[in-house]
Image 1 (cartoon, rainbow, N blue to C red):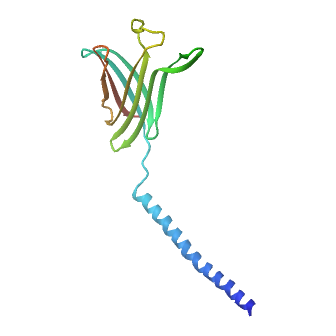
Image 2: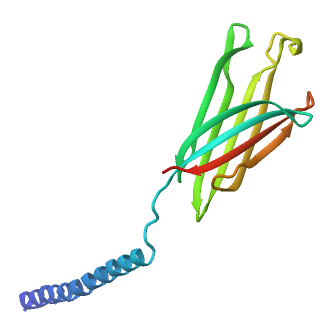
Length: 182
């Protein structure tokens, strides 16, 4: 009698599993169909390559004194970086030192939005102050930092930021122009 109940239980479980499998397969088929339908309704967007031209203008009393140019080729996605500079040792104590980075650091992130692109830019320009400003054995470092987010129209320059130099009559302006590459 116990064997008969055991076999009935096994048979019941097998029937239950066989009955559940078709419905699970139907559910997976329905999900795959829904996913395929969504892909047809929203076709994948083609990736485009862009060139981002950056200029840092140094002005005094409204007149351009100097311009530095930087260029990056990007597509939508994570941060890209340009870094140019020098690692300079600075004394931190008797017989010890630490390196600091001087120069230019530019990070840029670009995301497509219809006919425009969203730009996220971080810049850091640093150098040593002139000898006439050095009044100690430790270096004096000048730094300009402009970070900004904006939406750019392709082919048209956009000002990311402008800062006044607190030690002179000079201003620094960061400008970006985005063009689509062919």
